[in-house]
Length: 272
Length: 306
Image 1 (tube, helix red, strand yellow):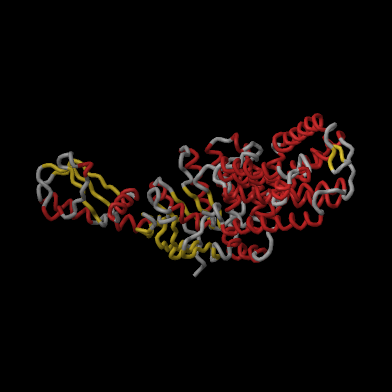
Image 2 (image 1 turned 45 degrees about the horizontal axis):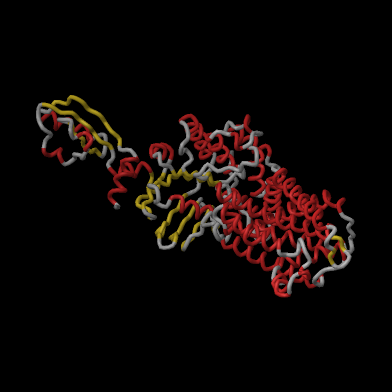
């Protein structure tokens, strides 16, 4: 059982000291994927079922009474909103729950001991969160698409907003996971920030139907731009110009990513 | 002179106003079996955490195999394997998956043969495909050791590895760790079982309240702190006055009449002591040679530096 010599160790290190440790990143990414795949009933099937129930109940009650943007039936309007809501909530849930579980059980040391930089950790946690969010979103779409006649006005907008939205929430989950020291605090973050911001983002209604004050308030909510831009991809109609939404969403991602990277680099609440 | 395995210089660690480490400096050479001892809260785990990159020093520097643990963290962490004190595991994975994942974190590819060898050596082969949750505490401890070795680090830190472990596993673990040391690995051990440290470590540091109060070869430390003791039960006459200076206070024996414990620096001293006792008319009813153990040195040091 010969150890590596100091020169060998230094040699391997030199090769990747300034760059990106791809293998380490890929391993953490894969580990995060396996983590939610192994409990797929809880992490994928359950949120798909919840969204299906939302759609069935809301469409049953409101389909005959509400048309949005003048011509879009309510079920068709609701469906992209529910897909996006699933993407956002599950992206957040993945990174936040992974990190807080690791911190509380102590197995976070397995990630902190190896030579992974803050960049590799950020990329692995956020990408895995995005994959879960997008898989659940695709699942919700597949099981509910038969309930409404949908058009695909601009598929690229759909893809762009889904990717950016999942990245933002994956990053927010990472920030929450770093900050929180117990499950209770993650639940508070989820229930008092993510959930209200999602529900008040126009998933279930067009913000144009709100009184002026609430419309203005909705425009301060970045989740609104994610849902509105995503929905534009389906109908070619939205409350806000999709390009404006894209700028807001991309800026939000830049801000949350900068925050997450800074926290990881400083070791805040991780490397005590 | 080769690069030290671990080189810690003037490390201070503060948590708010509490100073966990107060300017600790320590050099551990390659190939050493080194013991880091101290009571709870002395700063052992804080020091190890700083060396391992789990914690950041408030001031001072630490290097592993010549690599700064902050500026050159990749090389420093690759050179180090840490067996953590807590029995932690990831409940989602099997033993083999756990080791494959750890390999990947360190950038090691195609590590199956080495993983098989570690599993074999730690008697984990039959458990390779079992989920971590299904393992006993002892088996989980072995997996932690395996994880620390998976990237073949030249320096291995074991933080209280035998806490709560049964005798059989403890013996097996030490046999294995001794072999690693013989093969060239530097071993750093923290333990509450001082007989283990005495048996295994060639050099020890004792920490108290965040400062090193002793740092020496284990043998030298034992010799310096009272060497060997000669315990006698005498009758016929009291201990001659000139031998009273060698007396070691031993409260546990105080109630036994005629029992004297004398400190000797060399075994050759015994002959002279026995001759003097005969001259004084003392009869030796019982005689026992006692070697000071690390535990006594530890207790003495902790009292002295109070």
